[in-house]
Length: 313
Image (cartoon, rainbow, N blue to C red; front, side):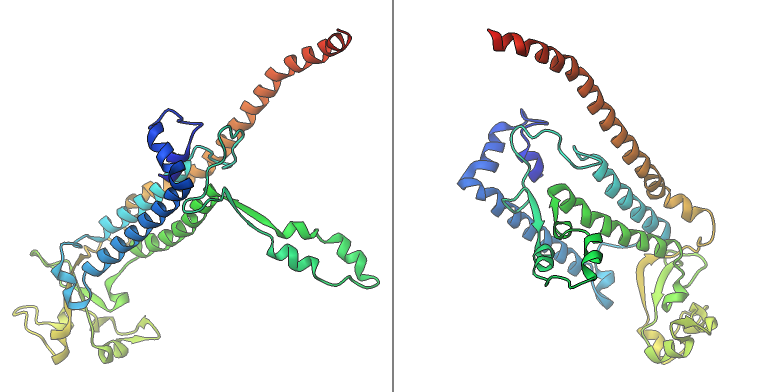
């Protein structure tokens, strides 16, 4: 949003008055303050949504939840798809380097800087004492002090963390595909009825310590609905069964079939296509630059031929 309102080259005619206010109001600091306010409001809404989702016994008091493992897998897969698709829609994809900057560079959101530059390590290297004797030859083989300084443009500041988040999403997708309730101290009733596939969570730590050893299930017969409740009457078998609570989340038991891989197909396909798009994007940019150089070559030759005539005149 901030980059779009700063743009004057790609879509310069799009809401020009709004862009003037966004970039020039209060000496440009209106944009900086507005970005931080929007970020704070977004963070507050995220925290509020997490809190309202419920914790413990209040989890089922909300409208959220109720998805099966297939729905959760599809959701995570679509998130990964959208992450990569967002990167591919950037104007400067895939190199994120502007060839021409007619009206100035795009500033990083919330700052007045076009890029973040760090030369701390360069300064530290330059403060090191000179190497004595034979170590001078070794130091000559090492990179110069300027090698340790780096700059990050706005696009990489935006999409760098996105790739990290995408890695976290991949782990989440793996967990959803391979999820089995008994591995987490949970179980389902099974059978028929509206609550047949709802996940039950055991909260008795002593009972769980007996069923698991170092996080591995050693007594799977203890983590079942039949071990906690009477299958006919629904009455609790032991005193701690009443502490178990049923979640809105469901588990239908399709883990191990083909369906999990179909559910995560959008994300997997986008991950396979993304490197190809990077390669094609770089190749296309190189080809367009070569065509521009070829088109500019005759003009340069003509200017060189006319230069002596201009000098004589």
